[in-house]
Image (cartoon, rainbow, N blue to C red):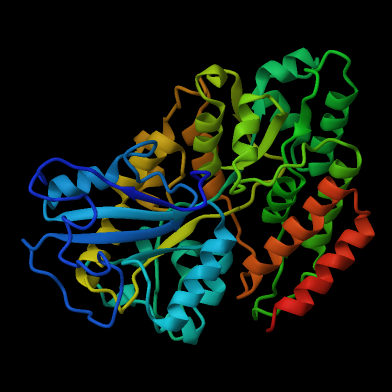
Length: 453
């Protein structure tokens, strides 16, 4: 789960050895018409044919050469005939809506398509799953290489595996130590974790202390987003949007009610800054540098964004503590459409990107915690200390959390329901002052109008 802040980008990975190419995109590809996008021809290229592979994703997966682990450039050195182009959008819902349309039309698909865990329940349904390669038929694939729950999430009812796991999404609390100190709050991560352990209400109560402090930084809210808080709380609950059969139960779910009550209390108490995380307009990203909030409920994949968005001025000011209750928020898969022109090369790239060695590099550079069990046990992960967060045992915090996650059932419509509750429910309260009850009823109405089970 990861953002560039732009509505659309084509991150062309420029690499040495392609001087003969007229341009990075068209000249390096054998696919002159659509530059490697999927079509009806599913033939594979030879090992020397120059081709372009498109990776479609959302946010920031940490693979790119600019802010990520430079895996695309590394892969090109191993395979000089392959150029990789990353097609990314910042908004996960927009990405998924577009992907569904392209799957239905069987055109316009990238060679590799990322699928977020909130939408994997829909992707494994027969009408969509049939569009993707079954990794169980791919040489070298072993589902046991990932956390037990990870590949199970990408497995269809008849046993096909449509995606390989990228990261997991164990949660934590990212907090501004300077702001806490000025507000007279504890700044030690272990002390904070002990103070709110087991109870999200205690986290909100600390926020009230921050808001009441006369020495807290002026204009700074305790939390960045009511929606982000909702997502983190819900991630820690045993029941969420759907039951074990995939049926939506959001309107009776104890977990959803708990998350809604905690998040809306924070909004009503004026503790949240009212930003939409990962918004296309980049307002949330820009707010880090202008010190608009003191905490972010951050899954592991968001840690890199905290650093990137805060910039050099924020180095050493942020820390990470264990959350009141651990949960899994986010995490994704790489899937390969069958209709691609270079299916063999695409599956090889997907497997390489999600291997233990590469997931470790992404974690070291960007913070996305591996879903590979081998990577999680590696000393490079266990002992990682991110220089942006000096002395913070980042590896131990997130690796321990990832192994202790008990995931809730995932249904086909979870991602859509989450999007409506957070953007049309909680965000509406923050932006327009809509009452808690009205915001909930508006969200329920929209879910019933747009989600057809």
